[in-house]
Length: 586
Ligand SMILES: CC(C)=CCC/C(C)=C/CC/C(C)=C/COP(=O)(O)OP(=O)(O)O
Image 1 (cartoon, helix red, strand yellow):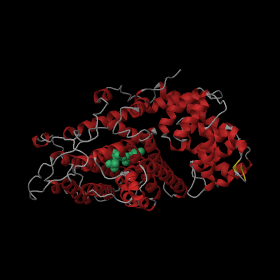
Image 2 (cartoon, protein in one colour):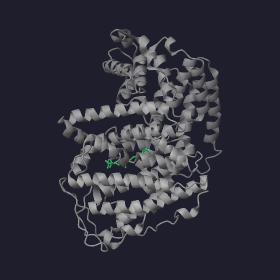
Image 3 (cartoon, protein in one colour):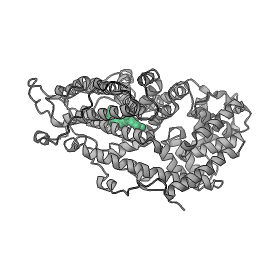
Image 4 (spheres, helix red, strand yellow):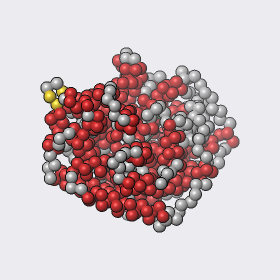
C-alpha cells in the first residue's frame, strides 16, 4: 500500500460567501472587450476587474423534487427485481436456442439496441468467438443486409474483419444498381459504413452510395422504416448514446411484427429497474451539489448537475457502475465551473494565479484571489482527495499524483486559450487542436473513470493507461469538435477564443458554411481513427467502451446546438424520458 504520508488527505474547509464576494457584479460586456486587471502588489487583493457573464439560464431542475423521489432502498428482492431475474434467464435461453449465425447476430443486435446486452457479455462473446473460429464465411452470405450486419457487429466487438466482404456487391461501376430496391440492405450497409478505418475507400463508397439512395427513397416502405431511415441519416447507430437508444428503440421494437415478447418485457423491466438506481444516484449527487455552497459562483457558471449526470449516463449507464458514474458527474460539474472561471469570469491575471495554484497545489498561492474563485479551487482539491481516498481504500494504491497531473494539464490548456483570447490571437487549426483535445477535459475524465471503474488497480495501472493513450486522443478530439460545432456561435458572440471553424476560415478564406462542413468531415475522420484504435488497443474492453461512449455522447449532447448551456429544449425532454418517466408496463 502506498504510504499515507506521501499526500495530504485533509480537506479544505468550504466557508460561506464572504461579503466582498457578494459585491461582485456580473456585467455583460460587448464581445470585443478584453479582460484586464492590475495586480496592486503581491499581498493585497487584486483590483476588481470588469466581469463578464454568459447569461446562462438557472437550473431547470428543482433539488427538493429530486430529493423527494421515492426511496427505493428496498429495491433488492422486490417484485420488479424478481421479474427481471426470471426474464433474464429466459433471454439467455433465446441466445442459446439458435445455431444459425445470422439469427444469432440479429438477436445480438436487437439485445444491444434494447440496452440489455450488458447482462449477456459472456454469451455474446462466445457466440462471436464461435462465428470467428468457425471461419463463418461472410463472403458467402447472400444478401447485403446480412453481410453488413455481421461486419458491423464483429468490428464493433473488436474483431478484425476486412471490408473486402463487400466486394461481391460491386461491379465495375461501383455498388450494384440492384441494391437500390433493398431498403433494409441499404440501411444496414449505411450503418456498417460508420465502422470504417482510415483509408478504406470501399467503405467511403458504401457510405456515399447508401446515403444517396436512402435520401431519395421513392418506394413505399411503411412509416416505421421511413422513420428509422430518417433517424439513421441524422445519427447512425454507431454514434447514438446507448441509454437513449434503448429508450427510443423499446417503442420502435414494440411495434415490430416479429418481436419477441420476452425480449420486449425484459427490456422494459430492466429499463425501469436501472432508472430507479439512476434516481438514487441523482439524489446523492443533488445532496453533494447543495453541500458545495456554490451561491457565490452560480452567478457566472453553469448550474447543470442533472445535465452533467446525462453526460455520465452517456458514458456508462450499467447499474453496477454507480461509483464511476457519480465520480464522473462530479468531475464534469467541477470542470464546467472551472472552465467558466477561465472563459468568462476571471481576469487573465486571476486565471494565471489559479493555474499556478493548481500546479503547486498550495492554497496559499491564491491568497489574492476573490473568495468565489478560491471556492472553486477548494471544491476541486476536496474532490481529488475524495477520489484518492476511495481508490486507496479499494485498491491500496495512491492515484493522487495522476489525478493532480491531469488537472494541471487541463488548467494549463485552459490558460493557453485564455491567453489567446487576452491577446486577440487566432491560432492555426493545428495549433488549436493540439491544445483543445486536452482543454475539453477528455483525458482528465478518463483518468478519473479508470480509477473508478471497479477493475483491479495497481501502482503501475495508470502508467499503462498513458501508453495506450491513442483511443483517448481520438475520442477527445471528437468530443472537442462536436462541442465547438454546437457551442461556437454563441461563444463567439459572447467573446471567446477562436474556435476551429474560425481558425479554418482564417487559414483558408472559406465561408462559415464550408468551414463547418470541413470540421464535420474531420469528425468523420477521427471516428475512423478511433474505430481502428479500438481494435488495436490493449486497454481493457470495458474501459475501451467508455472511450467510445464519450465520443458518441458528444453527438447526442451537441446534436442541436449547446445542449448543456441551453438545456431547456431537447435535453430537458431526454432527461425526463431517461430519469423521471418510466416505461409503461402492460
Ligand atoms: C461522456 C462523458 C462523461 C463526457 C464528459 C465529457 C466532458 C469532459 C465534457 C465536458 C463538458 C464541458 C463542461 C465542456 C466545456 O464546455 P464549453 O463548451 O464551455 O468548452 P470550451 O470552453 O472549451 O469551449
